[in-house]
Image 1 (spheres, rainbow, N blue to C red):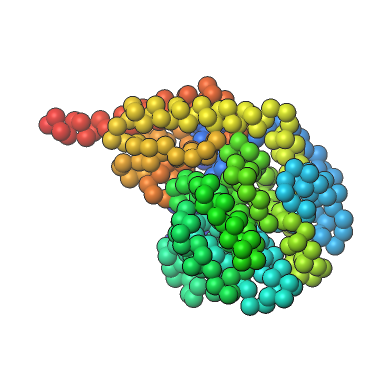
Image 2: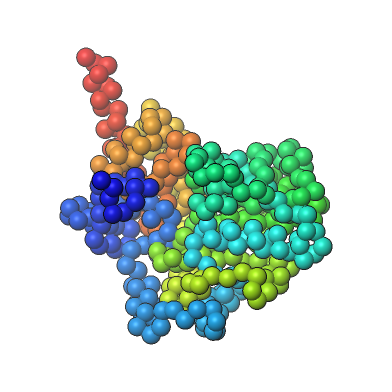
Length: 398
């Protein structure tokens, strides 16, 4: 008999009842070091005092009124984002996929209003992940996500990631814009090269296209900059944001220049829950913390140290891990055995991680993590690796 919860997730038989910082306590009483952060979501860790207080106080006042009225919390969060990014205006929504849908609509609408109704296609890249809605699985292009859901949504083309040689030939008279992740997360923690990112901007300028960055996983401090595209010195026209911006509370956003944002006139796009007082109050609390003096410097410092620690893990785990990828606190270890086996061994060491494509173990801890906690995680990774090697050693000995 089917369970009450639909079976579309392969859940571990593990539930948590309490969190604090980078630690989670399970209902079985065991304490886990959380280097998954709800898939790069709990940016300030669990039960962060300021975030908890903000949500509780706002919930006691007003949670939802709809976008028929002004929402001061949304206005404040938008101002913070505009003041600290390339953007001139912000649209709030509820998730990463929704933000990406909004980004696509914004690009198409701008081309239409600028006299190019034929420009509707979005160029995406092999290995991308942009969400699970019908349009976004088409943008992603992964056959595994498309299987069984009927015809793909038209209007999405694909080209090789990190390959500037194929960019121009991928542009057609119907291309409206380009969307790319600065670091491909779901497909295996694969950073874009500087040459590729600069090439995207150059191609967009040359052909009159809009450049959009999917910063759902890479944004809000994850890489040590507020947004990952800042590492490349490349200015986008629009970006999508979600995951870490709410610190665990559902919140998404589309940040855009005036050139795009001005075309979203009343009635052109909307969302019932997007920008509600409770979500935006949470977003303000998160962003104020991340923008506070020293916070991003902490992420960069700890992230760099963590990268070096993971190199040491690789050297001590021959036959299990063979390389380290990523930037800041968005890291991946490429596995030799199946990543599912490695994840279970790591879980047995009371360390929470996330799998990614290309047989990669993803490590995306809360941004408040310390070097000491990173060292502890690395020791647990080594113990997990040795536990995987032990049965093979015994088998060879026999």
